[in-house]
Image 1 (tube, one colour):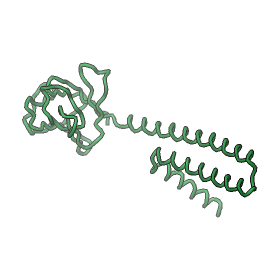
Image 2: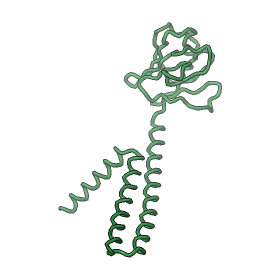
Image 3: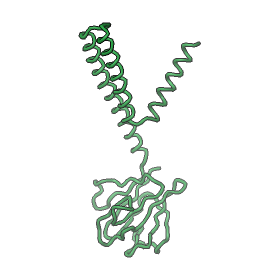
Image 4: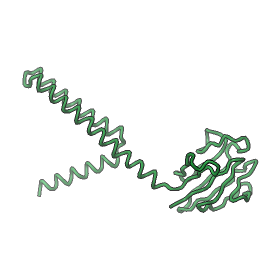
Length: 187
């Protein structure tokens, strides 16, 4: 029973480490462990308890293990990142260049405007206001709000009143200045 409790505790620790530590943290832990083992072996050599040949073999083995573990961590984390990015299926795509970048809506509120600071999506168009509009998520529904823009925010060709909001559905066309986007949501 004692062995299975210890194994369960190790599994829980491994699960915690995988879920709560960043890639950088995991790599630092591995490198720290390698340094500790190498330091202990160096002390043993100084005390004439281990030969240099054994130390070199152990360090070579640790370096190989180290690079293997780091590779596994990177692969595992990249899969997690891909899974998370495919999970979020709400985005804007340029209607003129649909093969272009998707502007993922991954926050409760996303501001759109001409400024690069203070907005999440910067549109380089002189017809777009500095802070033009905002897309908000509320209870798994998305809304667009015109933030008193000068030239208006359009949804499916209809101009929103300044300061008003409208619920978005997948396929809606949004226009800010001269730029047109399609709202896609597969929640």
